[in-house]
Length: 265
Image 1 (tube, rainbow, N blue to C red):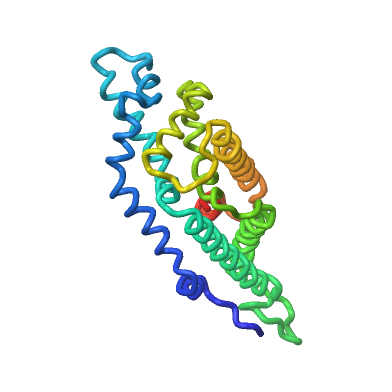
Image 2 (tube, rainbow, N blue to C red; image 1 turned 135 degrees about the vertical axis):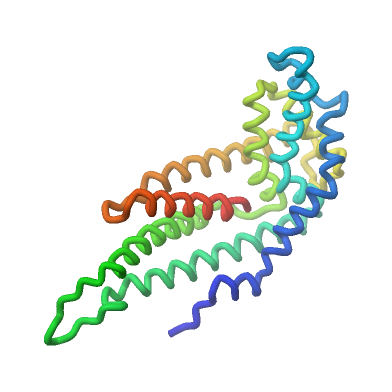
């Protein structure tokens, strides 16, 4: 049988942790600069935070909270903004390749176990019956895991082609949704992103306002909506009448966590 690499072996092969740790360190090192940009007097965000329906005494506190929340939604984006176009493309490709191989190998392992109903309880010619309740539960759990892995594999097969803007597009969906929730106009959203990109000297070619809308904002919101729809699908598809509520709930939570991590890139 062909050697199926473990997840640890795939991690050693692709070294995704170097990128994940890079995202954390980039964010810590540049958070003050990002907050300074978001809270600058020329930042459209200041106008909206000061217009919140709060008392004068609470204004500064609420404004700081709003700016901090906006900054937190740009953690992955900050990392991609500081990379060159080539590095952004390679980063997205590397992480997608890693997760695709993880899904493929884990799905193969689960299928191998499910394909053999006699694992842990082989039949005997003179006594073919078996009532291995433990393995029955294991098989029910593996069936749920198989479904979640299959959903993620299907999602990845339908992803658009990787480009040097993909990392920015995927990572900014929640940020644009946040801006929309606080009532920021389309014009101010574009101005804010343009200001952030200029201050961090983002390596890209689409420099005018309309291109920010078409190349960043619209694809980012499309990715966000797609992920939200798939999340709802996951919670609806993963069902079992055999498993207890606590176990099933945990399996759904883990499937959602897997989805969130994989679809981060």
